[in-house]
Image 1: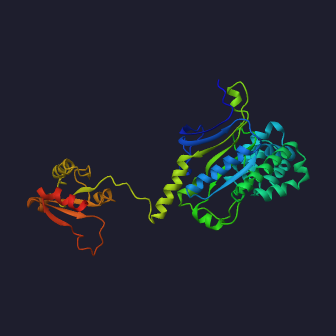
Image 2: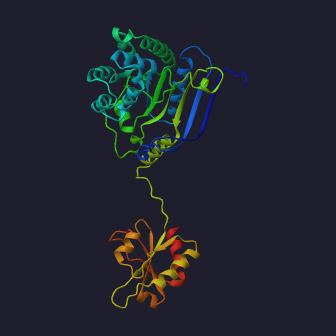
Image 3: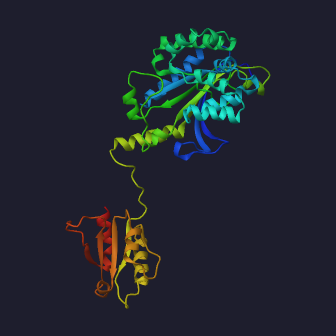
Length: 387
């Protein structure tokens, strides 16, 4: 189609997810995503290291603490082979392993044995490996000492890639932010090499984690929206995917950032730094109420409707209870978070007056009872108190 053989590209666009959403965790069916990819023939692991550096550079600019969890598809496949998993079950077992960040090992093992059809012994051998994670340098040294593990050709090739990658990352000064995690699987079949996920470290956890890498032991606060978000970026190498749509294979490596999830974290941080709960969006400034009782009290519906129309005509956001004879507690409940009330009473109306009252004041506040004003002055009084 053209003579372009290498390209670096990015885009920000709306994308769609096929599976079920999880709104609390920022996992929407429709969401915005930022993609960055490097395509074309290069020497091994050079663009991969650049992608990882860019990830850390972006989150440093956003002042977000992250850890990058890293694995290699060949190492994962070799791990399954060493453990005794039939090759036709690699992907289905991989999808189970990928749940270890959300489920306990016992739950994942149960799924592999009862639903995926492997034996307890094979599952236990898988568990010996996939529960290992830590700094990339330490993990590489540890795994290279396992002769049975490194005897597999896929494992050997994957470790060679990651050793080269670790050397490049060390020269860039970012190895301390990379956790080699054998449980990271990434569910998409088109990955062929390095795979990674960016995990946000909530504020309290970040304090506990200073100077360390790998998985933190501290618990995330269930009250912090940022702690529920999970992965805020993920990607890897996919050397065969583009070739499916063209005449020749084009090696690629890339990252996708979850824009909505990142904004959720930034918004939560801004609210936390402001030292208050997320502000409510106020939609009503004045609530028109009727006070009265006894057999002669008719609810003053017509009078309330007349007053509400006066306020609306003046551009004041006002509301009233759509009942002929509303009860007092019902009106106060409806006026929750509304700053002002215009209160109509039979005696006051007979004198051509209404009461303007600021809601939510303490018992000892001098303005708790409100002020009586002439009906024709109510708009001016309300606007003065709202300004």
